[in-house]
Length: 356
Image (tube, rainbow, N blue to C red; front, side, top):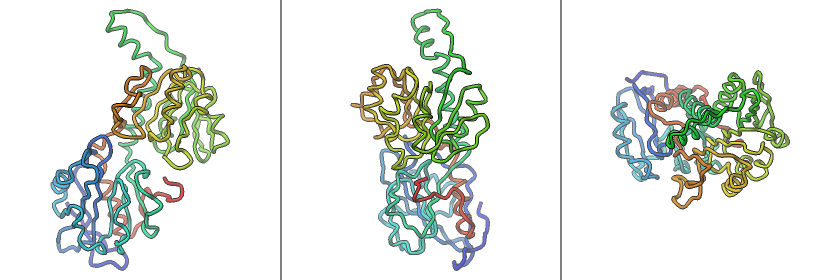
């Protein structure tokens, strides 16, 4: 299961790389809230110490998660916080949320973030000497893209109305809107948003994207920068949010944005709950400026029972389920750790200033 690879520059004797046969599962409503710290290990076969921090017990049992990982990689030796041992020995940190005990990790060479975005990390306190890397698998992106396209097609083809008619034994065909006359804008044109936009364009939708920088996507109109946001939204039938959460995108879906779209437009948010001003959203729904919204993410998760979104007739709620980390994640984490240990430039490096 373990293969040899060369030591990093200035490091001890050769490391050993761990490769799992299958990939780790995402557990609970959010990605697993743990921190795993992997330190240098020689070829002799000595254990690889791993620190687990169970910061969010509602989502994960650190002891159970550690046991599952050990089944796949027997050389891992787990410690539970606060039994961290010698911080200076730590070479790589695997983290989901929080700030991490970085200050004392004088040998830290990289941090691998086990989530789709890094808004759960305090980037201001993050050590500038070590690169922050994130997981980004094609399978994860594919699941989110499937979710986006599914929600639009369900709305376009009146699936909810047909389910209601079936319950009442009503036979009433409803003509769908013409795809060629249906205008979609995808906010965020990265791995997920760009892929979704291409699929919509291939289906025949009038498709546009909006992002920080201009994108070259065949058959898709590209808007970029704050000055072009209003034009990107104007007259759209569907708005898809797949943006990273940054200071510039927080609260971007507000009353001003909703006023720009076509009356009766539909919103799908698979990014972060903080992109949406919930009070403005509810007002837009109540005033029929929006015909509905499908929300997979929320400002506070799990969504509080008192939230008016639960009972709003125009809102579809899913519990941060656009993607699941079943059979994905740990193989790429192992590969990323291997890159760092071999002294190779890591993939999926986060720009700390941009926040993605």
